[in-house]
Image 1 (cartoon, rainbow, N blue to C red):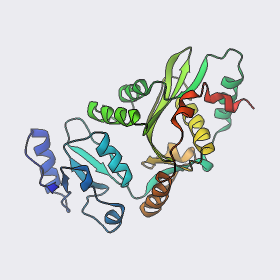
Image 2 (cartoon, one colour; image 1 turned 30 degrees about the horizontal axis):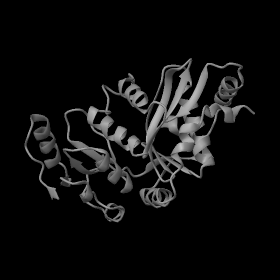
Image 3 (cartoon, one colour; image 1 turned 90 degrees about the vertical axis):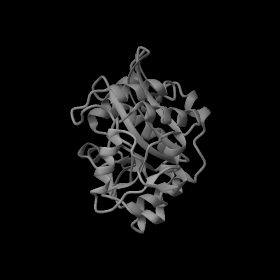
Image 4 (cartoon, one colour; image 1 turned 60 degrees about the horizontal axis):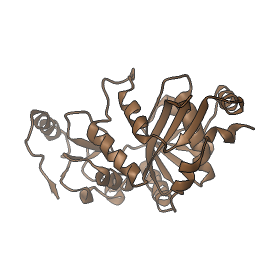
Length: 271
């Protein structure tokens, strides 16, 4: 059901005023089934900039439904949940990943060292990765968008085998990683963290290598940044993103047991 935004808290009332001042009224949703479809978005469904819906609720069902329809949540503590669908959309084709010479050297060093303290795994500590991403200080933002509700939603998706984590370990201490949603063979990157030089890049390089080997051809990066461009990312138009992501989401999922059984993704970089 689509309705007006209820007046329940000062923060929500402030958001209601913000919405009312927009050139287009954004629909307030009471159920995740009411998200606009790909076709509705392409046919100019009501929106303001890249925002196509707001809600007061978020959980695993809401997040899953949003990704299936080309949207994702991005909001701050105290706000209603704001659902975005950017145009253009930043993506990283796995075939285009640029592994700089310095990163290639680091990957090989960590992989070749006898009794190396470094390991890269999948799905060993999802809670630890998302917590580290939420708590990592970033120079380009004040606070975190990974609220407790958002964390709970993605943790439930992980329990349902629809969200994955990549962990970088040094002497069994979690030092870097990333997480995101994996539907079929489409990966929607969410966030990464690191406490050492190149840690998150190593996590990404190992994940790209594995995903590509499993038939995954595209990673959603959401927003256009120079950093992602340097890694091989590029913006594509919304329609192209919808077509490619829908096709990949319909493919058979990557075997969860296979992911969990991998002892060290760095082993693939020993050559």
